[in-house]
Amino acid sequence: MKNSVLKVVTILFLFVTTSYFAANKISSEKIKNQTIKVALLLDTSNSMDGLINQAKAQLWEIVNELSYAKYGLQKPNLEIALYEYGNSNLPSREGFIKQVLQFSNDLDKISEKLFSLTTNGGNEFCGQVIKTSLNELSWGENKDDLKIIFIAGNEPFTQGKINYKDAIIDAKEKNVIINTIFCGNYTNGISGMWKDGATLGGGDYMTINQDKKIVHIVTPYDNEIIILNKKLNNTYIYYGNKGYSKYSNQSRQDKNAASLDEVVIVKRAVSKSSRLYDNSSWDLVDAEKKQKVDYKTIEKNKLPKELQNKSEAEIKSYVKTKVNERAKIQQKIKELDEKRRSFIAKKQKEGTKKDELNNVMMNAIKRQAKSKNYTW
Image 1 (cartoon, one colour):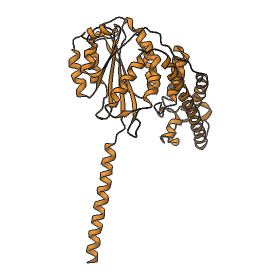
Image 2 (cartoon, rainbow, N blue to C red):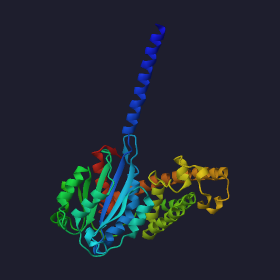
Image 3 (cartoon, rainbow, N blue to C red):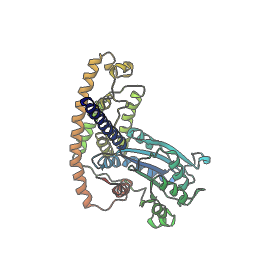
Image 4 (tube, one colour):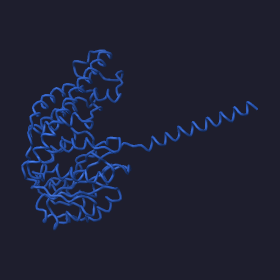
């Protein structure tokens, strides 16, 4: 009798524990990291140099704002894709459209691709570039992701063989919001059907003066952040096949940012201190923080010269030193940025409403994010 009871208890115990772990496995599988996916479709025809320059200059401010986003207790990832259209240098058979970058969280690569854009006259097919981006990009199946297209240009929205209304139907099926940015007069954009495109796409219709000079607000904290950025760069330890080229590109994107304005390199330094700037695929410090490093398999000839003759223990020790060093630098930049943001907010209250690219984009993203329970 006792044995029978014991068997029943054992079976019940196994059933309950198996059910518990199965339920938790299912639960954990359901929990996915949310991602904010932003596709930028930029007109690169002759008159759009100002638009491209604004995109280059404002990238880091947009990234910094998005780094504060939350979804419940989680902090969403960020991926940005880039298309150019309306450029006569692009293949006519493709509708003068080119995918410059598939969705990526590599912020240096995004910057690099933006700086590669040049303008030239051409036909601007809005419906076709929207449809192309919907078909080619990896939008994913997570319904909690925030999926947004921003299309910017200055010709009628109706041009091309693909009707923008048909493209927007496809967007709705993929749960993608369409925002339109007309570079020019508000009423001209309405008559050119840019507002209609945004209304049908569940997004915002916005206008900017693409040729307006961006006024960056200088703060008393900028110089110190620039100095800290140089110290931050010294904490990166490249490894692997692409390590050195990625490390070099980091430096090039610093120079690209600085070429626009000193304040742009400040904004980039802030981005480099945020959770969204992750280089674990080529930097040992980021990889160590994510516990992705197998020091036994590291090819020493692909490390910086000063580490190539070091033992495994010496490399580990050096990396840990740099992990601590970077954490302190990034924390200091974050503290200075809080003061910087407060200073800028006060200055902006004294000024007029801005119609720059980052301003209209962030206003739209925050409004649309609320409907999917994202907060700031």
